[in-house]
Length: 476
Image 1: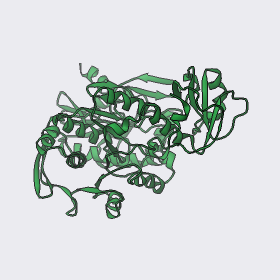
Image 2: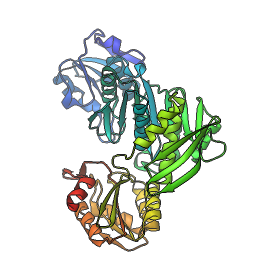
Image 3: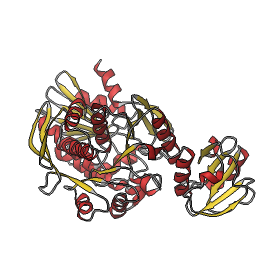
Image 4: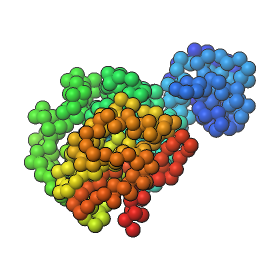
């Protein structure tokens, strides 16, 4: 495709060179550049892509997108105000704007994004719709799964994935819109048919620095720039603000009487939850095997988005009932009368949600295994310890993805929040083994933080590890 065609909608300051240059591929990683590629000089938190422009040209880049002229880079140079924004538009153009050819449902919020996406997918499948998912647990192109490193991929992967989905006949795409993706302009130019807001609680302050900034980024997504319509949790304080002054047509959900979609006649037991969903004078009876109040909100979000999409009520009820588990979320095993639960909870609110659910159904002790991720929001570490202490009888502190930090330093920052008996076992496998050894009949062991993740990331690299698979092997 000619470079000039790729620049549609891009605000260009200057162009040095021939705009009819043929472009055969896109990349913002110099090592991945091929012949006649377009290279994007992205400014990262640790490295500046402008420093790698000449290397990209040596590898075959025919053109570069940059925020300043780079002397000695022998290629066409397109100078723009913001390379990230330009990359989003150019990626859409390169893949023939696939987002415009399908129905898009974006889900954003601190907790619940993956679960809501999976529930919507279940409903769409029940309705006979061909569906794709992009999120934390990977990418699904109908029934085919691909791994993904990020909750919301970079624009090149995002749009190549959307193009593949369209080619495979996908009608609806449900994707997680992370705060990082919104802030870094990854979704610039993509307008979703529906945006779902779940909730806001503390997370990612290593990047956003303040809750005000983090909240502002989430709220800014609920505008005509990104969405045609919105579905919002009005029980959440930030959601209440979005409902109070909506910038797009908005349907609210929650328990509050003002909500457009409400859950009533609620029942909870060991098998799951039951409820009636009220909407515009109608009632939909819902039965789900998912447990906990937080999952009731996830169900309401999925039902609301489906109603706004025009899905029939019978398919909605069927889709919810048939979604009996979500990978890495509240996944349960039993061993000699001990209940073992693996969950992704990695924020103070996430830990509070899952432990509140488990405490209600546990006859014996609740033993919690968790750690905190390295190179991430340090201010939430003691708070996670505090939340775990409220409902746990014993805590086993261990590693999560320590990344460039020392795992013992991370654990040391969790300890001030701990108010119940605890043990420190840095190696995650050994920590799980110890927790299971401590457990007696009637106890519950909650292994939190990694969910469906398949590796542990440390200073010296990645090690293959799945909490769920490791526990299954131990049980054998």
